[in-house]
Image (cartoon, rainbow, N blue to C red):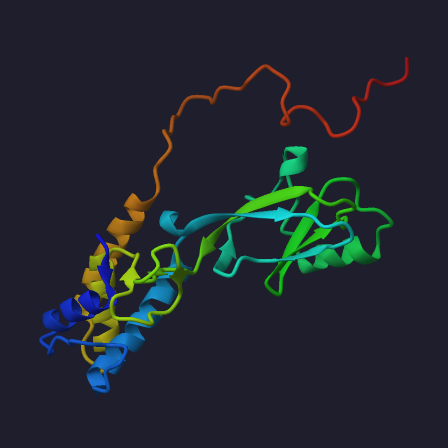
Length: 241
């Protein structure tokens, strides 16, 4: 269940015994200003604490010859590890490379080999070796920081509420519980019950957010065919005849 920013704030205020606001973004009333500020903080903090399925996006990078760095999408929150693939070669790219490993690649080696290695730095994805041709495709999945859906344009997502009618894409009751917790915390009041409510709802929502694989205690099936998991890069070492 989703709701607008004003709906979340009104529900939280009513549960706390406060006057329900009729406006947030344009309000000059101190409590309403605080509710909006805490609601902004709550949404952006939730983005950081879990790899939400509904915030997962795919970004495609198309190489330009001689260009090693490529900017992240405008709503980039963080890359999901082990999702960057060298689509052109149908294989995963190696990385993200640590700062120490990157120094080795750029200073100690004459050649890093034919397969792509990458790191994420300063909001950009950087590849070695630098692509030597146009049109080579890489893609990866990332967590978007766009948790707010624009009220006028449903295709636009952003990380701040700018209108009372903006839609919050997190679960409505999760946001209500978190806003109540942050409101009482900001006022220095006892948060024991609010923290318990929020934790219970958060655990339920995160537990239901992803599908779960079937787990078995038996040995896993191994395919007998040749795959990328049992064929070495390069040539077979057949020895000396």
